[in-house]
Length: 388
Ligand code: MN3
Image (tube, rainbow, N blue to C red; front, side):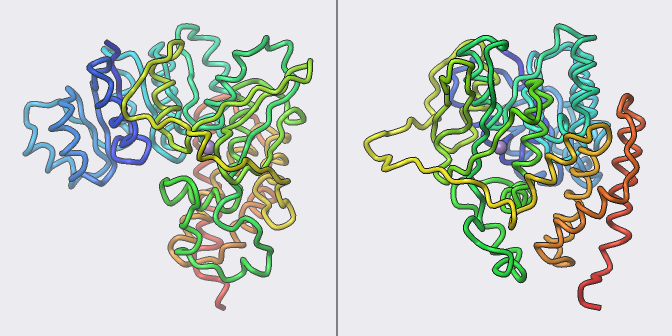
């Protein structure tokens, strides 16, 4: 039996993870759960999975948990996430939390020589170089990607040797606004931006998907996870989201991983790897019902997420962090109705222009830069400048 710690159990990754665990006939045991502010769902999960340790993001939630589960060991906030990652008695740490808060928990998991089921792409985007250095220092630790594209690449890479790899082809659904042009996007509302055709995900990642910033983050994530240069990473729009990504080898063979657009398989595979196991919660592809798979080039004139990411990624050092942090705040401001959709790109561009590149070789510098960029964006754009 494998023991699992789930960070972000009330988010969409966490809920999917618990669904596969529920259907896996005692092959997994949940050792710890952490939620942010949805304590009602967290309470249900605690009652069902009976973890020994629990952590929650808010003081209010903590007090409720204290009354409901006096016998359990409880933690609070970001420190709580780190404390769970530092526990001795588990095998796999699932980092199902979005945003830069997942980085320190991941670092703690690596230093704890555990398997990290990485569902927090910011970790590799912001701190990829540092994390890769750390993985050398802690050779028993390993990262198994959960992001569906990276899980696909990870699986496809098993079809050849690393020295035989030519390039990685990341697929993208194209998001809510695929086919739209700049003038169509000027006045789109939050509600419109949150309607994703294939994937049901959290708000932040749905917006990132519609700006293609999500794909940009995934390019940088792939660069660090698989140690592949940016020149050898390509993006293709594949609206059906059935091919989750592909790799091309030196003999022209392309190996793709296909599946229904759901997060359950990539999560489950990160738990069972190097084995594969049946799980009754998984849906299987029915090729009789699949009409066609289509592909198109990304529209990089309208959607700047990919090009800005290549630029930030190739500059390296602190720039991917600037790309990520400025986007996080910009999306927050968009969701609050304080900026327009296309201003998300403006903010990222300006933040990257404003920033002086530094080396990212220790966690203190990473944290400091991340904080500064967020504050800079917030101070410059949160006052609803567009209406003045
Ligand atoms: Mn993805």
